[in-house]
Amino acid sequence: MSTTQQGTHSLAFRVMRLCKPSFHVEPPFRLDPADLFVGEDIFDDPLAAANLPPLLSSQLTKSMDSSDLTYSNRFLLHHPSDAMGFSGLLLLPQSFGAIYLGETFCSYISINNNSNFEVRDIIIKAEIQTERQRILLLDTSKSPVESVRAGGRYDFIVEHDVKELGAHTLVCTALYNDNDGERKYLPQFFKFVVANPLSVRTKETTYLEACIENHTKSNLYMDQVEFEPAPHWSATVLKADELHPVDNSSTGGREIFKPPILIRSGGGIHNYLYQLKLASPDSAQMKVEGTNILGKLQITWRTNLGEPGRLQTQQILGTPISCKEIELQILEIPSLINLDKSFLVHLNLTNHTDRELGPFDVRLSQNSAHEEKNVMINGLQTIVLPQVEAFGSTDFHLSLIATKLGVQRISGITVSDTKEKKTYDPLPDVEIFVESD
Image (cartoon, rainbow, N blue to C red):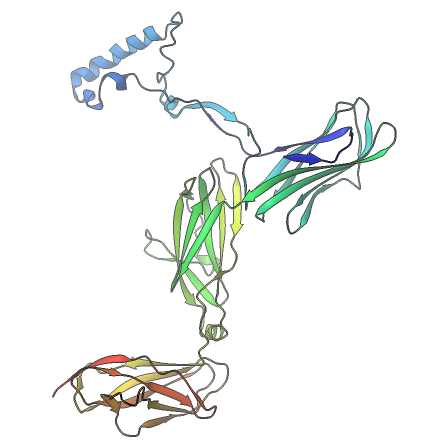
C-alpha cells in the first residue's frame, strides 16, 4: 500500500518486492491408466504382466490421436515426472507477500516520468522507518540523477536486513526540477508489516528445552539452531541419534557439515534439548549475585528455494537463583542405625560469598515446645566450627542418638554465625530407620 502527498507531480515511484519465484503447479495431478483397471497385484501373475503393457500402450496410442477432439487423454500420465504436477515453469510473485523477522527485504524501485517533458537534477532518497529508528538505504544527494526523459524511468534496488517486528514504512522521496524550473518535492510511502516466523518456547530445570515452531506459509530448513551460553554457563546439545553429545560452549565441537532440519509450514515444530552446567567454580559467585541469564539462541534457515533468514533471540532467563550466603548439606548417613546407640552424620558447610564468614555454632533447634524429639545430639549440644574462607567449605561430623524405634526424623539442624549474630534456615528434615540391637 502506497500513499503520497496531494499535488501534481511529474514523477511517481513504483515498488516491486524482489524474492525467489515459486514452482508453477498445474492441478489436477495426472494418473496412470493402469491404476484405473487393475490393482498392484496384477503383476504378480507372469502372464498378465507380459500381456498388459502392450494392451494399454495400444489403447493409449489411439487416445493420443491428434484427430481426437474429446481430449480424453488430458489427465493421463505420459511421463513419471508428470505425477508431481510441475509444469517446468517458475511463477513470479503475484503480491507483496509476507515479510518475516530475520529475512532480507529486497525491493526493486522505479521512479517513472509520467509527464510529456523532461525532469532534471533528481535527488532520490529511500529509507526504512520503524517505530524505533530510520535507516537510510539510498541517497543520491552527492550525485543527483541528471535527467529522466518524458515517459522514461530510473531504476534501483535496495536491501535491508529485517531486525524488528511490527509496522515498517519504506519512504521514497524525490527532489527535482520540473519543466518550468520549479523545484518540487515528492514523498511516497509504502507500508508493510513484519511478522515473527518462529516462536521459541523454553523450559529450564537442569536442562533447557527449546521448541521452534514455524509460523510461515512455507517449509523452513534449519541450517543452525545453536545456544550461546552466558559466560558463567556451558551448554551441551543432546541428540537422540548420537552416542556423544555435542559441546556448544566452543566452536571446536561444531560439525563441519550437517543436513538441515525440516520444520513444516503452518505450525511445524522441532524441539532442541541442551544440558546446562556451571562453567567453573568461580561461577558460584554469579549465583550469589542472583544472575539468572542463561544465554541466547542463534537461528538460521532457508526456504524451499534457498532464501536465507536469520534470527537471534533475546537473552533467555532461567529460574531466579536465591542468594544463599551459606549452604548446609548432609553428605552421608549410616545405613544401619541402632536404638540408643550413637551414630555419626557427615555434613558440609559451604560459604557462597566473597568474604570470610564465621565462626559458627551448629545445634538442633526445637520447633515446638511440646514436640518430642526422638533424635538428639549425643554429647555437647552445640558444636563450634571455625571461620570459612570466601567460596570455601568445611566438612564436619555430628554425633546423634535415636531414642525410638521405626521411622524417625533428623530435624532442626541449625547454623548460626556467632560474629554477625545471624541464624540461618535449618536443614530440611531427613528420615532414618532405627532398628533394635
